Image (cartoon, rainbow, N blue to C red; front, top):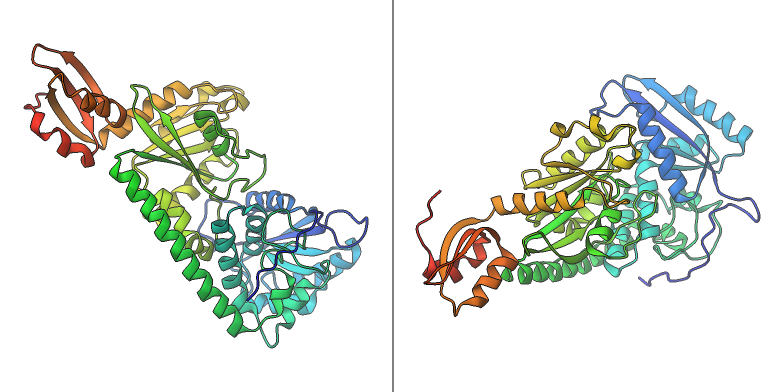
Length: 450
């Protein structure tokens, strides 16, 4: 299957001079929701997602039900109300705060003329905009096709209808391509391909991603052989991860006030207090209701988190849902089986708080209040990272002859020095080193007395 590479200036609208697409947001508050988030807060976040995708929100609706309606999500009466609102407001699309089943989507499309977009499609759409590397584009396309496959019926009429109302022409995955919200990515021309070709493309994408995964694994093995600890920056989207990454590493990763501004992981080298070297990786932000298929598609990228020696979680302390966001991060880390890794928490954006002293640092592991933007608290944060990393290393006491200065230097760069003393016999060091380097120092070990 050929790649769609046509690109155009990015302006999301449904006609000449009409401006952004007009969206209406819908959520169900049900008794069976397993989340700390209220429907109101979740819908507020959905509005930010819609804005990030380029839509203008015309209004919102919350329907309280024991559980979402299996046919129309909100119930037939509310769906008819949406139909009236659609005509009254001239809506281009209606965005639902949960992932709709194929059945729900088909029934809603029969009742409504506006395009139907659920939270999953919206997140995938934003990811399609922000994927810059080949790896990112492969992962986004895989997630989109796996999402769309069960929604392809007959000869693709439902998906063709989704593309209806959007501008014709190709749209690349990311790179500023145009297209209607919810149908960016593989492009309108792909929405009409049959199941067999989609499955073939999915199989091909999985093979390509496996190649990427193998390459990443080789890079991680090379880093492990050098015994350089890896610190992965994690956290809720828009918590300030990229700003902190740029400040710590003097990098230039885009740090926008938008959700998912960073999609492709970036790794840089820094030196901690005490001259210890580490690699810091900026990763994609998490969000509540993150689609399982998206986590699976991005497994190759998320292995940077899985294999990290320490997680540096960034929390936006100025956000009213900071605790809920932290809980979401914990849940996703649990899905990745990375929840038990050593962690340091950067309580970010303290410059936006009325009284930073009121922060309850006890709610988070190894918490340090900071302002990445104003570069406050960073020295203390780096000290904490160094200390927590040291706890995961092997404690040693060694006496290195004076002609082994290279091993002294290596200890400083890769390990953690508690004390160092120059004696008549050589350099006596008490500290911790990565397990991978222990063999270099065994011949010079001394009994460790604590």
